[in-house]
Length: 386
Ligand SMILES: Cc1cc2nc3c(=O)[nH]c(=O)nc-3n(C[C@H](O)[C@H](O)[C@H](O)COP(=O)(O)OP(=O)(O)OC[C@H]3O[C@@H](n4cnc5c(N)ncnc54)[C@H](O)[C@@H]3O)c2cc1C
Image 1: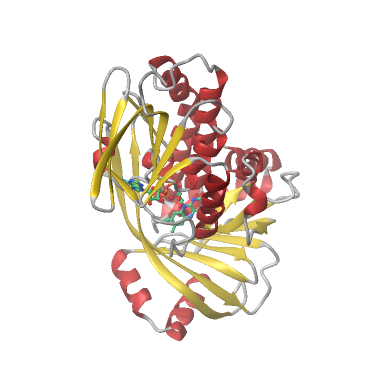
Image 2: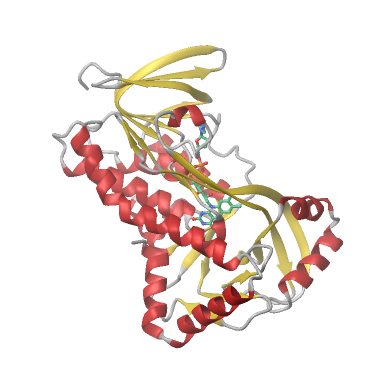
């Protein structure tokens, strides 16, 4: 450990930070996770996540997959645009996979990772918030507040997986951001017709709306301008359901009930380079994306997996040294940049009523529908990354 308290300290025990910690079990590297939450299952976060089949494979290797429940498979995805031609149906059968992806609760993921951290005896400093970090040539000092005391520990490598919550932990990084002027309303809706494991992604000029199969209901992600979201949140359930029906149409049946409504502001925020001296930014700390294509967690999980693979590939390397970090940067660059660009272009191209773009969108959806190799390549990219 060359005089440091740990080889690696991870800030943030969310799904991405926890994934790296678990992937490094048995590596011989000493790892500590610092997490601001006090317990594994205490999150009230209402969001559900659509994770790709590729993420399932990673979670299986980490031993998390069997601990996750409930999990609902997505066997097909109907993609369309309101007020324009063109639609496509993506199916697991065409992708030769048992499912295109799965819908899980974010809080369920936190819980499963929390249990795994505990059972693997990983050092977890819970209820501790990192307030400052200082890097030197051979290590990083991490200062954190736990209850009323301020303490510090040192490591050879600092992994920041704080979801982007603490701007101070990105000091020195070039952060790029784009405001979309959109917020998301999430909730669980009951529909008159069974979902048959089918998801819907519908593009509208106000923003995309997605309906994901989840247990016996559907998880809703409805994006709109912040003031429109103010009124949607203030509506009583009947008024909300009527508005949803008018906006979404009746392809999923009649909307009968809505529960667990919550809102999230949406922006694109990413760092130009996720590597800083003796530090790596991972998951949402490196790139927070619009949920339009359900890529955020999937990309973050691939960050976590690839970083662990890099660290494990040569145990003689200093984990926070330039050689190791340069290797990680190079390995992740294509997937990161393409994931960010794809998500951003989808928001820009699909969230407006500019007539020429409506034609282009219709043509793109028709192309996917009519040319199977193009569709398969697109599905492959969405499921497994670049
Ligand atoms: C409405 C919505 C829908 C989404 N849908 C999808 C989807 O369908 N598919 C998909 O792939 N992605 C989706 N995402 C994105 C997904 O939620 C994120 O990509 C994912 O949660 C990122 O995980 P993370 O571990 O990087 O960060 P987080 O989940 O934010 O976890 C960060 C952790 O760090 C801790 N922390 C923060 N600051 C500190 C500190 N200073 N000290 C110690 N601990 C700290 C926090 O308590 C937290 O536990 C969606 C996002 C939203 C908002």
